[in-house]
Amino acid sequence: MRTVIKAGGSSLKDVAGVRTVIWQAREAAGDKLVVVSAQGKETDRIIGAIQMAESGGKPPEPEEIFREFESMGIPSSYHRGTRDSIYIAFKNAANLPALPERQRTGFYHMAGERLSAVAAKFVAEQEGIDAAMVDFTDEDFPLAVRGHYLNASPDYGAARAKAQILLEKHKGRMIIVPGYGGIDNRSRVMKALGRGGSDTAAFAYLYALGASELYILTDVNGILDGNVEGGKTVQELDIDEVKDAATLGAKLPGRKAVQGLELCYAENSRPGVYIARDVHGKRTSIMKETERRPARLVAGREVVAFHVAGNLTGMEDTLRKHGIDFPLGVGSDYAHLVVADDVASYAQGVLSDFAMRKEGNVTVSPAVPMIYAGVVGNGMPDATGFLNRAAYTLTHAGMTLAYGRDPGRVSLGYLINRDAARPHMLRDALTALHEEFIRK
Picture (cartoon, rainbow, N blue to C red):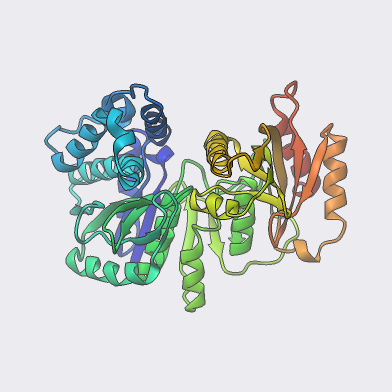
């Protein structure tokens, strides 16, 4: 039996969190592969340092960027090759704009995950566990990818072949790998997997290893039926519910991430996939099929909307290449694009660059703050009146609806104009929908 354990940044924020993850991995069944994200807020600080360097500013020192790693008391001689290459690169980040794109993207963006893997290996050894850390730069690193440097996709066939070799080499050991990216088989360049990249990597390993179980460890007991007071853990979600809920903002693996699981299903494999705080606790199971229910959870997030007009040839390819989600509607010469708040500035930059390349033939409106909220349930296609019920519920709660939007097969959603005088508007929208569709 083989088990994949993926640990998010909130689970790895300090030495106690890393130790808990290692304990959880030890408790899992069979051979284990542990996929780690960057610790704490490292990814935000890395991106900030890159942006500062690219604009001619002086980035923070590596010790500040990787402060969680620094606080763990790991000897400077431990995995010196990995550590030194990362620290030297960030000390020289002022020269970053002169580097080829492949070095600006993959290497820098995935530094946090590499140091998390060093930390996890260090703690595992402290706990007396026979563990192997396999870095992106190692010949036997198993996750092959292809595509853009910032938004690559797993090469599932190549990854499966390499994973079997890895298992033979480290049979019986806990294998620790950095998440978020992989290696292009042809160019041997590190490439990031884009938004939710560590989840994408974990599901790719699930498929490549032929694993029986995947645990996505978080700091909560599974997925709640609403991020509201009184929300309860959802015991089961099917694959369509997962994808649609992630689109609406639930803390679930996104559409790209779960492709590895869909490949398992296509080959008649039914691995257990669990989102949990620990491997023996309360959890949400992801399944191919579940009992049909029109409303299983509510979800939402703060977003911004852009209106883009003009010659949009190539815009969708540009957005996909840079891993930007939420295209809302596209016409012959216009598009409404909705993106999550945390990628708004990045999206603005991508759209501005696209408009510049079009030499004045494209205009991009200023970002408009909005709320994106809705209801998810695999019985939604057979339900009647839900769109009107949701609209009435939200308007009765004092919301001004901008668009009605069905983001997927088993959900409904609305874009709501954000009111600066109501700082808790997202919470209010989710509470209203939860009371109407879940608690009743």
